Amino acid sequence: MTSGLIIPAAGRGARHSEAPLHIALVNNMPDSALLWTERQYHRLLAAAAGDRSVRLSLFSLPEVRRGEQAANHIRQRYEDFSALWDTPVDGMIVTGMPPRAACLKDEPYWPKLAQLVEWAEEHTLSTVWSCLAAHAAVLHLDGIARRLLPRKLSGLYECVRTTDHLLFSGAPARWRVPHSRYNELPEEDLAAAGYRMLSASAAAGADIFCKERGSLFLFLQGHPEYDASALLREYRRDVAAYLALRSETYPYLPCAYFDRPEAAAFRGFRRRALAHRNPDLLKEFPAAAIELRHAQSWHGLAIGLYRNWLGYIARGRSLIRAPLSPVAVASQSALVSELRGGT
Image 1: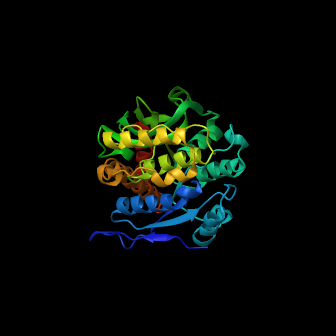
Image 2: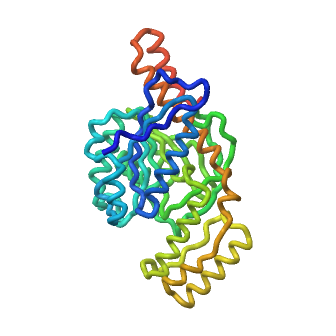
Image 3: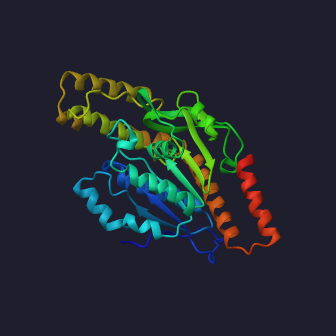
């Protein structure tokens, strides 16, 4: 068991006298993305923390099926999940997990995840639910079932800010962000259940939305935390699954992600794979200069979003710890009003 990774405050104005914000990362990503996800969130929170220190504790739902290597990594670097219930945290991030059942309630991790949703409402100032974790949380909270898409949604999609909200302070009016999923949450169902849409895409649907409960719940169907080459790794993983006969469908190219020469090379590889389906062919998978081209595409938006999120948590923690004077009560009411009213 570890005591958490400390992300030190940066800059001359660092608030060294303040205790670090304690963030729990419940990383349920598949084995191939487990370590990448740790790195992505660590880098993102380090860039977003500014003059605040952050303590990042790692957890993973024990019911998520793991290979031996990933299971060993979790035993060495992660907290025991059962310890989370008694761990005081300020905020939490919960990632998606590989779906195996047609209905999320039939997944082996469902009871523990439903318990986590209820625990987060009472024990965090704010929780981020990412991708499939967002689908599961919304299903548990309001019975909204995800809807299967005709094919996997993968690529960079333009999103627009649909309302003013303190979490988007300083953000542009529109941006492009990675999405990668087989299902979606219908916007009309979310609106009917009282969820507030913060950003949306004409092609990808709901992007970021929230609901103020005991904790501020923030739901992301996209992946602003992704590094520049994450979609390429996912595409290669999906191609590998097809070549190894673990999938019957050859994956589509991620949308608006490759340039024309790269896309042509990948289409040529697809023709070869369809004609001669063999796992050894993956050795000739084309290269792509993704890292250089997309390095800053959505990184600034992600840093700003999580900087504002950490700021909200810090403000909430200071109000809780402050004496309940008339000024403190007024400040707390103003913060809640700010979240619900938008600016």
